[in-house]
Image (cartoon, rainbow, N blue to C red; front, side, top):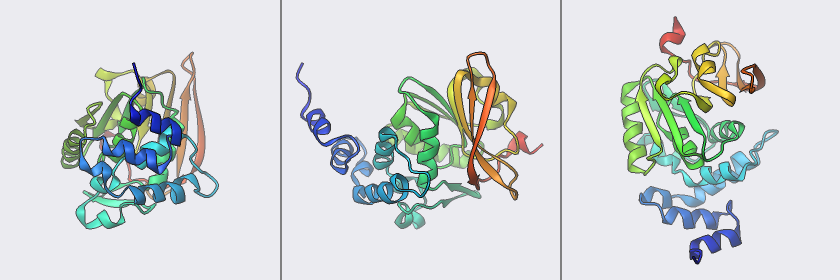
Length: 249
């Protein structure tokens, strides 16, 4: 079987180039992928690949960030700002994280295509879309029903059939779909929920911001070894919206 001309070009120019991104984007069903490609490329180069002291290097993550049309995941009044390396309001007192944070959390997960990933805090669906570029099974939970429904609709329109969105309290995880190879949390509990640790498979990995809303929060990388022992590593201070629901009790 002869390789497609697109594959030949991708192999020639390299997967992380803006040209390969444009070729891939033009072959997506939704026109949003082909919009504002140069802005996404600049966002990745200036705000992710060359981020001071903590650059993201995984080429698969960098390509995903170049592909996903972030402007579609923010309200219309903020779409002009979509490719700045900053968080933006998405309504209901929630935010979309800055692109560097999305990319670095994705890199810390060390994702493989076959991984089953649980995301707590769907928000606008942007992080879920990035995860959907990197693996085949994404389960995402959003406690704010209007946000979750809107994100699910957009993800479906964009063709992310590998992403399932559920409305509910992420504190308890998604027991029916567990265990998960990877877990990512995009809101900050004061301590790591035990249910999430229990639903992480041995050999699995979790990335989660931890800390009080008005105190110091840290990005935490959690690993579970083959015997079920938990290790954690703090990376850098962050500021996320607090985890709500049972986490507040």
